[in-house]
Amino acid sequence: MGAYNPFSADVEPAATTRKVRRLVTGVNAEGRSTIVDDTIVRGKVGHGMPTYVATDVWRTETSPADNTSPFTDPVAGDGPRSVGPSKNGTVFRILELPPDQEWRFDADSKEIKPLAFHTTESIDYAIVLSGEIWAVLDETEVLMTAGDVLVQRGTAHAWANRSQEPCVLAFVLIGGTLPS
Image (cartoon, rainbow, N blue to C red; front, side, top):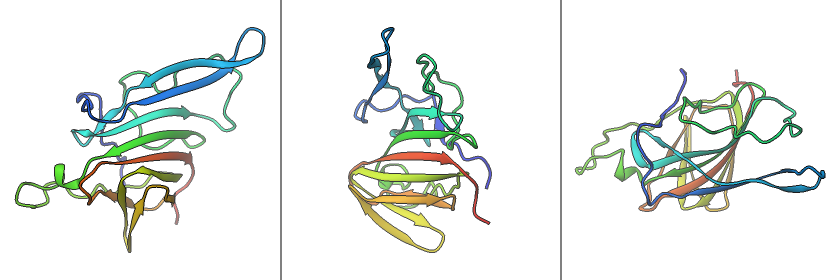
């Protein structure tokens, strides 16, 4: 599968979407732990839909992660953003998905945008924070509700929100390989 990247900085997230507050720790001049960043992280719109918002909270490029350097925001800016992590990196993301009926179907319930099947070269931990979502795989579909966790091991998948409410998920993506 080619590089999948539905995110754009050209469309602003809807005012109704979740704002993610990020707190980052570090050490002060005396070597004592403290908060070095307390900010609302800007999300990016997916599929041109202002209520489909991905907020990358943190990224690393290496493992083990370097916690010795001074704080610099690894997700700042409006430049291109890959969906997955680098080979030895990680991504921590909050994703808000609107109901499919708001963006994948027209008024007559005709599908106008297909499910966004994709793979990432990573192992992904997906946690449903609120709402419900269908994890759609080649051979099966499973309904996930708040508190459910999916371990996504580099296989083709898509998400379908067949409910009437947004679904919010947290993802931790860790660089990996694709199955053979």
